[in-house]
Length: 364
Image 1 (spheres, rainbow, N blue to C red):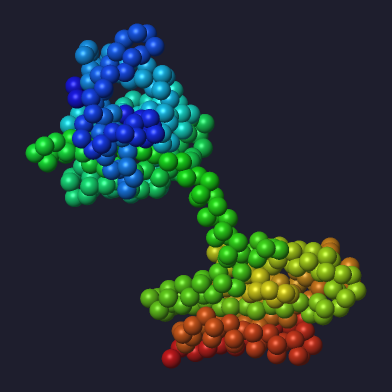
Image 2: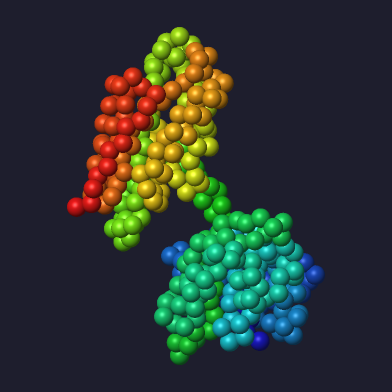
């Protein structure tokens, strides 16, 4: 059987040139094995590939490989997890570190491509298989994909898998060698940064930037399906400044948080509630069949605040003024519909507050 590749520490073999270097390693049990090493490029980085030349059966070769990994941990740990795919036999070699990343013993995973794919998250399997197929079909020289893999404990970690095709002297693909890097922390940081960029820090609700993006999506959807009307509600707390002045900003913030939860309970799961800043909120009502649907939502909000006052509102019952813009196909941008909803809200507030005003933009 063709020997598989191991990747030792670049520091340990820093003097090796790109031409093969033949050397002998003595194991702890006194036996010696022959290794041929050379420098290669993998995923844009130089790596030293060490090929173990077996003198016994494949089973004995694997035992020698495991002995090497125990004697020189840098072989298996120079990167997070090493793997090699033999194209002819469709068998994999997983380093001990590769298995350890997923919580398995080295011999607990069957060395086949099916075993690898089975550990990939179902939502990520197709992209991974396509990326690997591009290499094995010789349409690409590199494998590069980010995906989730299931650990033995049942949870998933994010992996950045990279690999490079290795060919024989005639140019025929023999194997793909590569490495797995755990990028879970990076993915978590990206998710946190995304959340911070598109959500309000006080309430955790979508902020104006995310609201504008979703209005844009609603406009695009309506262009494809004109019957899919939607509405935007702009809400402002009546006399909120007096709450801050009388009880301080801590109470004011508590009112904002509680009001956000109350508004959320008055709309559907597919609708979007956003805090615009200060004491202003906005709602996107999706799939509005008739004007009365919007009226019912506005009345539900007003009634909820009137019959079940907010616990944090020490000054008494909280009321809101609501401006509503219904799109029948005439709006071209998020700014246009938000402007009309905002103006309708100010009209409601100038009329004494605790009421709503509706404007409807007809289709062009």
